[in-house]
Length: 462
Image (cartoon, rainbow, N blue to C red):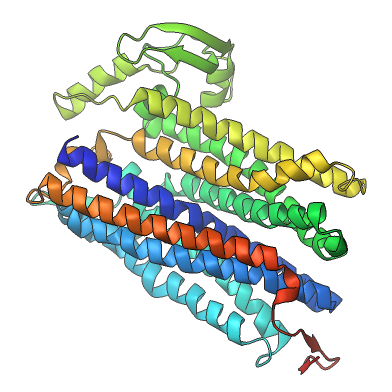
């Protein structure tokens, strides 16, 4: 393990951990906004208690997401100072906007939502959660604006070996951003929908007295999850087509395509191969599918790894430009598999709800309980494919990962920080899980006394 490898492992581990909470926050905020909008129409006490219940789970996750996000940023100055110097003039701008605008928006109105139940009008209180949902999505937009520059640099010029911003609006118009952001947003909605639906399924399965309470949340969560999962598949297809032109090596690695494909390119459902010798001993191909995925037609060649390696050597100079093929290939397929599983689970659940047969299928409810993990695994696999498939570049075509690390930080210091952060994140994770399980176990009746709205909209204590 080199200092570069250890620094990459630390950043990857912390990012994966942080990325578990971000989509839950974005998606659950949106579902909470829908639930509260519904509550002010029904005025049912049980709807308010269910809303309070999921609100507490959301706040636990929101707090952990903030903490892990702040710690993650420390690494840019610790282990990646060369990268920060090279791209800081570009990378820092969208991150600054995210902190000063989007994060302040969501954190401010989270406070309004928490403390405003009996102090502001129902309409304003509902809008506060909608603004939280908008703020979380804006945060994702600005962070992905920065990440999209790493994937497809635009709006810059090189000055004395550093990337300086030349056109801020070019960053906002980055083609990579407009396939990446909708894909991540749809995945976040799916995550939030499954978070609410899976926990509601627990009460439908084990707490029969709360069936009428949680059925609306179960239905709304499934609707959001179904729409989000279908969008993930459709937009993911567009994103893959964009990568054929923007990062063809990543797509070739995700297919383990060592040589240029035939005119009618097939796509492998699974393939077992040796990444060193390129020998494939088992594969299940789907004829024409790769051409369809790449060009929306039955014909079309896709360039292979060997061709692209020669092209990159000619363009960027000597070196190995092939990413870890094994990781890229299998993370891509696991992401696709999980995406289709989520769509099937959500659509099947909506069918059972429509037929009033949810409780008659305990196996489905049991699967829904465990399906709370599916979106997080899918999100992680998507991130791994995106970032590992870009290697050896930290900024595609401009700076290699090996040149982005801090030059004066010895490997033992990286090991110390990695160990410390990992232990800290482990403690935070244990606290998060224990709190979530505690409040799920307590149920909706464990919260403060219900406050009922009067006809004039003023909240009156029970």
